[in-house]
Image 1 (cartoon, rainbow, N blue to C red):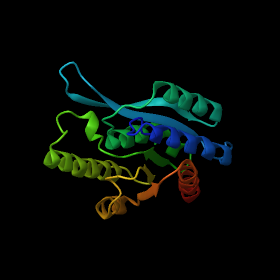
Image 2: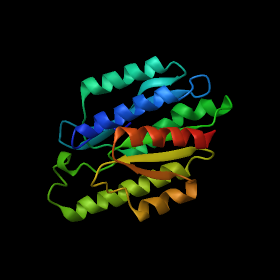
Image 3: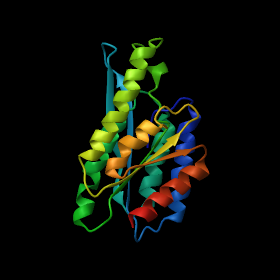
Length: 199
């Protein structure tokens, strides 16, 4: 779940979609973990990124719902690092493989590079485009480092710079899927489809 959104409504759309999907999933068959990712500036105004575990892998969906409520209360922030989220989620799922579960990561977010949050990039188109390209490559590299992992990038937003043929080509070697969505219902369907494909 991408904790960075511009405009703010994308965070709520993503959370609403996840909440709807949980109502359709079978907790007896599908364990779920909730990972947040966003960024911040340090004391010298340099961007930092972070991923964190909002709720551990569980079949108790009320724990996931509590994690989403904490996200709603905190609200959005910028500088999200999608590759950081992928790697963190991989570590969360590592023991599920040993337990015989089919490991799947569904990354939900706006997936924009969040230029308005980054003063060093505001107004600098070249550096902005370079960051977009780097973001795409980092996601692809993170996925290439794993095997047997099902990955779906659920991409919210009208001006979504990861919704491109280039991103699809980068995801293809690892079998990753790019699913552009525009509302909570589409987010929910994308999550359920990803889970069904893993099973």
